[in-house]
Amino acid sequence: MSAGHDHGHTHSHNHAAGSNRARLALAFTLTAAMVVIQFVGSILTGSLALLTDTAHALTDASGLLVALIAASLMLRPADARRTWGFARIEVIAALGQATILLAVGLYTAIEGVRRLFNPPEVPAGELLLFGVLGLIANVAAIAILAGNRGSNLNMRAAFLEVLNDALGSLGVIVAAIVIATTGFERADALAGLFIAALIVPRAFTILKEAFSVLMETAPDGVDLDEVRRHLGDLDGVEAVHDLHASTIGTGLPVVTAHLVVPEQAFTDGRVTALLVEAHDCLREHFPVCFEHATIQIETDAFSVSEPDALHA
Image (cartoon, rainbow, N blue to C red; front, side, top):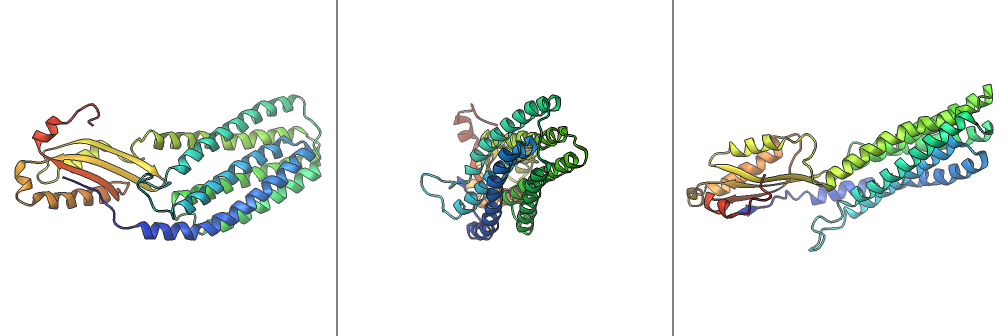
């Protein structure tokens, strides 16, 4: 016997996704506009810091776009082919986003070191102007996203994207002020290296999280040995095997397990009660709430007949 679990939260998830779309769309529009403005500014000024911040803002804009698309696609129901809908599209996009960030960080590190030894002349006035414009756009986007940043991981990630980019714009402004007041042209290269130091660790974090989801590792904070013990302690359970937990997408952890019970459980009505207890356990006893669980209840005779290559 097996059972899936769905509490009918589709409506609430869709409502949350719809309410977040307007904020994401406005924040994306602001960030995308600043990408264009800063790119023009980096060409006019020749500033490494501004160019790096532009690439950073481009990545942030793509992240916001992915968040916006994800919020929209969440409104689409799953079908016979895409049984989880488009829940994993954000993970695939995150891999591309992290790759771009690493490439930008590597280029900035190399170019920044080169400019420390041979700093080009950078017009401080224009650099300050574009830095201030970027910071204004970032602060506006932060204000837009702040109200809903805790609604889900997708919104929190979008908020952190913009917040991080605001620090980059601040670095550009500081570099411009230093150049204008002291003539220290190397400030531009130092600001570029500072921005690179902000984005590279974030790129590795995104890569780690994306690969973790794609490799279907257990969700953070979940100890499968502990899950096995909890399920094994349920009345009538003799053994637990084929225990697997993973994450389909943001906020969508899943778990499957086979519970071995005595033959009598199928005749005395214990199986139905056991399913309820197992689902309650998986929802309430762990750091991650497993709303989506598939439990197979079987006898020892059936368990022995199963292939054991992937048993856990």
